[in-house]
Length: 231
Ligand SMILES: [Zn+2]
Picture 1 (cartoon, rainbow, N blue to C red):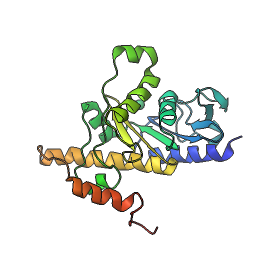
Picture 2 (picture 1 turned 30 degrees about the horizontal axis):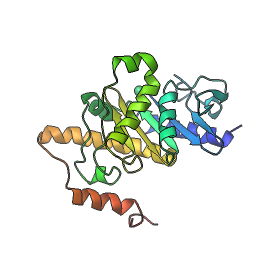
Picture 3 (picture 1 turned 135 degrees about the vertical axis):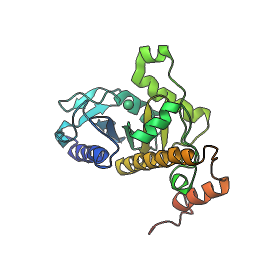
Picture 4 (picture 1 turned 90 degrees about the horizontal axis):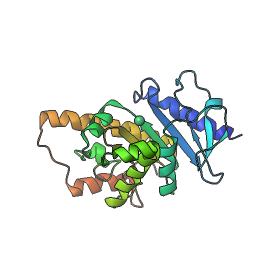
């Protein structure tokens, strides 16, 4: 069952170590099939090299396994909260990629410092607040999802215009309409964080790009007036 979905999720998970985003087993990709009411996710703690499409776990939206013999990634409940809150997203990626994680550990937003950032993220990539001790003890993974959704609600951000977040003291989550876009956004977020951290070494007081440049680059690639690419 769900062979095509498992193949897609397996392939997307393989892209994480291939792109240099992940070492060991420090990352996962999931995809939702909203019609079937299931999500497919990486099995917990399994090396990418030995994983096959059959190892991908299929769960319902309550997090119960409905197909597959493995245990799902421990981040499953975080992914589920994002799918429930945001009907337009089709895939979620979590990694501990070095530079995005460094930025997340500072607890500060990743400001848009240039057009590389503006092409994909229409504004700063927010950093969430830290989880409280009570949230961590009660339902850590689910509360991580809550704090992500809460950050977007409080700041009135559109998750499709800013397709990623830094969870404070933890690391990046990205998403997209499908697995390919969600992984691409993870690669771009890592590269933007890398450049921003280096930029701040060169010029510690560097501020964000102008709204005009941010808008120009973002809307060249997104929305009804996009002109970038081959249409
Ligand atoms: Zn993590």
